[in-house]
Structures are given as structure tokens and as C-alpha cells.
Image (cartoon, rainbow, N blue to C red; front, side, top):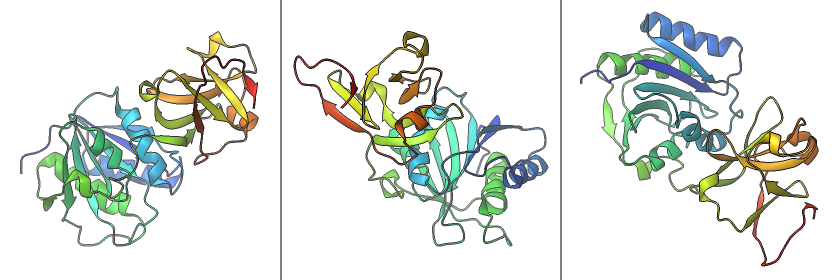
Length: 259
């Protein structure tokens, strides 16, 4: 097979900034010297491929094309799940078939999804990110055989999940709560309730007085909940995976604050 048109590799994992992310970078550098490696995110919610799946499409939305995303949230490492490669909207994604790449595939106009049949001769059963996914990425870049088997996007793990997720999928360092809902998919007559508060929509932080909770369309196009100059996670008592409540507003309903 011909080499894929790849100009950089971006890493998206739940590894944190410890030795595991460093191992990925070191292995990639040895196999693909000179290729740009980007640490896109290493604090995806641990073990929650479902939550990560809703964040990935938003993170890559405004990224340059011809990027290969190496994505690892893999609580089933060493088990029966497959490794997959997805080509979507001018980018490639490699990771486990556990739902993590399902939203990327489902939201692409013409995704090309494949099961990776190739495996290295030896690898740690507990670190497929370094020992299987990284070498697979290098082989894809160089046009070497990966034993790719066409796989319908509808057959990926997680393919039947909801298009959007009305739950918290990520908490940033400021305590802002990112949801799995695309803001442009919400009708104008919907109220969002979180942690006992009905939240008003605002354009950005400076439009809200300090200490007030609100929601806005963030830079990734998602519904995000914040407190101006405060921490929404602490004020609202919410963590990743916690649901949000959406209610259609009654005609003439007004006011805000606690329910």
C-alpha cells in the first residue's frame, strides 16, 4: 500500500504527563525521526473511552489536515478488542476498537474504517499504545502492510451511541465543565440545569459578573459550563460522567438561579 499523506502525529491519551506519554513520544521519534509529534491531550478521563469519543471530534475540528491521531484510552488492553485505523475528513486515527473512535467515524462524511490485522512479533500485553499502535502508525506513514480489513463504520464499537451526550465529558484546569453536546444542535427554547442551577447562556466570560455560573459555546463548538473567575466543578458539584438536564422552556418562563 502507498504511504498515507501524513505530516504530523498528534497524541490523545488518558496517560497523564508521566512515563507512559514519554514512552510513546520516544518510540515514535525512533521510528519516524524528524516527523512532528504533538501532545494534543494526555488527560482524557481515565478508562472512559465513551467520554473521550465525544471530545475527540471537537478537538480535531480546527486542526490541520494530514494529521495522524494516535488515540489511547484502553481499559481493555490485552483483551479481545481490535486495533483500528480510521480515515476521516483528511486525517487518520489509530486506536482501540472500544468506542473511542466511533464519533469521529460517525460524523465524517465518508469515513474509511479498517481493522488492523498486523501485529508486531512481540509486545507487552499491558502497553499496546507503545508496542502496537505506535509501530502501526509508523507502518501506515511508510506505506507498509498493516493487514487492513475493511470494516463498516456502523460495525465499530460504540457506533450505536447517541449523536450527542448530555453529560460532562471533561473538566479543564480552571474547573470548566465540557459536555458532549454540540451547541449548534440545541434548539433555542432549551434550558440547561446543572447542580441545582438553571444556567443562562452567555457569549463569553466577560459578559457575566464574577462568581456567576453560565453556559456558552466553547472554542470546540461544545456546550461548556463555567463560572466567571471561579470553578464550575466545585460550585455545581459535578464530575466527568455526570448528566445534565435539558428542559424545553415554557412560554413566558423567566428568571434564573436555583430551581
